[in-house]
Picture 1 (cartoon, rainbow, N blue to C red):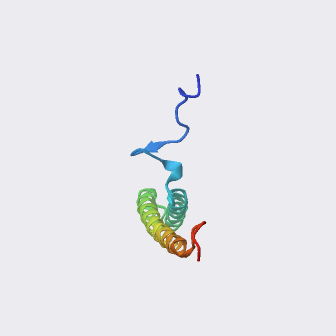
Picture 2 (spheres, helix red, strand yellow):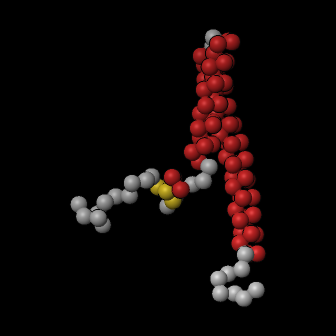
Picture 3 (cartoon, rainbow, N blue to C red):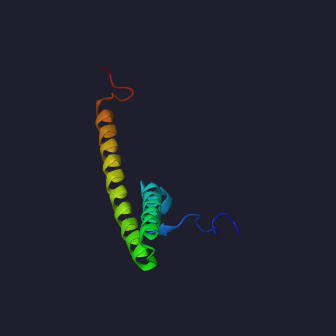
Length: 96
């Protein structure tokens, strides 16, 4: 195979590499750990596997969405601050 024939190494979703999506990894890890913790604690307290799995999956979804929203909000605020600072920095060649 030549360099042109090699497939891309990352996974694409809607034309975008998943590794390039900000906050994806951290929110998924947070959701998985949170869901596992809730499912384990629920199972230890009730010994009902079906109810524990349902609670674990629901908390996984909740933790993931919440972590995604918080991380993207912080990411957007940081990006906005960087753009604001860039506007105030003079460009090279500009006389101040």
